[in-house]
Image 1 (cartoon, helix red, strand yellow):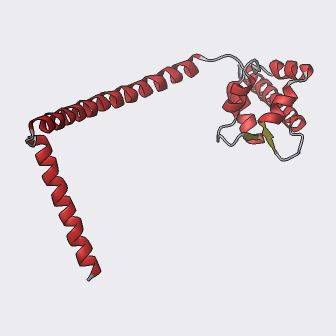
Image 2 (image 1 turned 180 degrees about the horizontal axis):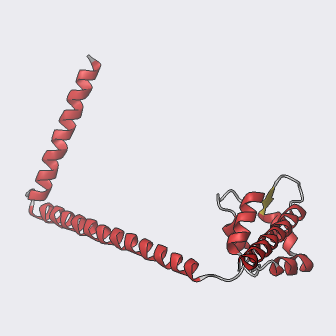
Image 3 (image 1 turned 30 degrees about the vertical axis):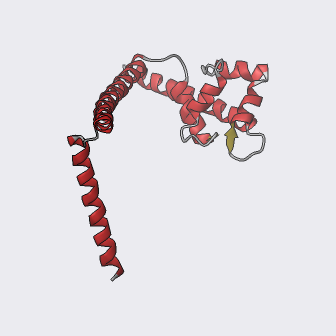
Length: 173
């Protein structure tokens, strides 16, 4: 049983090394300017070759949405990918989605939804407060009297202005 396990581990390690070699070869061939980074233009041009496209698909990487794939590989959003980003991205994206990948996405989507929902709730409260203030201002404008809401805000604004003026006076002395 131990020999079987060793054989399986050796087989998987050899397969991984071979895959990484192939990815490096693809990267170096696509890096036309030998900059050590792969731009979107270089990536796109390299994938126009049908043999290269087939080779990339043989590496278990879906190139049907090449620009999306490139953006997924470009982990730092620099519009180019280094060899390390390319290798890590290809290893992460190869094959079909696993259950854990899908569940991680669902969890992340739920978290984002919750944050968006909280933001919308707060925004609705803020809008309601602004409407109340606007209605009070409109009522005041038509009646000629100051609204209690506006009077409170006006006094607060006056105190703030007086404080700033006294600070300015102290600063100039």
